[in-house]
Length: 133
Figure 1 (cartoon, rainbow, N blue to C red):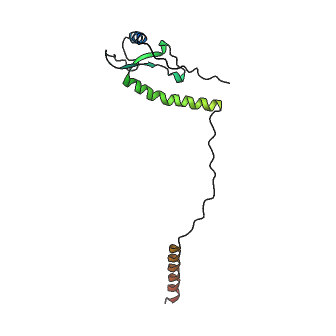
Figure 2 (figure 1 turned 30 degrees about the horizontal axis):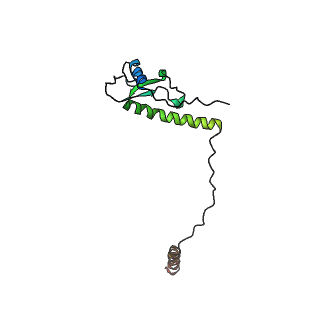
Figure 3 (figure 1 turned 135 degrees about the vertical axis):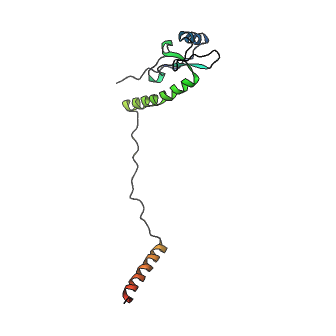
């Protein structure tokens, strides 16, 4: 039986670790490559997401602009969701969809006014045919 990906809990970096990470990447955003100016908001991003088998090691982390991180998150979330669905299906944890009971439905009933109108038109048509020239 396959073993699940070793999912690590997210560990926040200390101030010293954040400074080392910033210096290790020369103060540049890992995604866009532009410099992160002093005072700009940035976060440490996992290059490979934890949910897809990434680790908390410094080799798997890089500084990124907040806006760049949002874009990466938008790309990562569908891949993470698919990995979870695939894993659930693989181990048999996914339930089969519940089948709906199909009935023959209700009998259609005609509206009395409409029936009477149709019958009257039919009788009028028949009367015209009999009385005609």
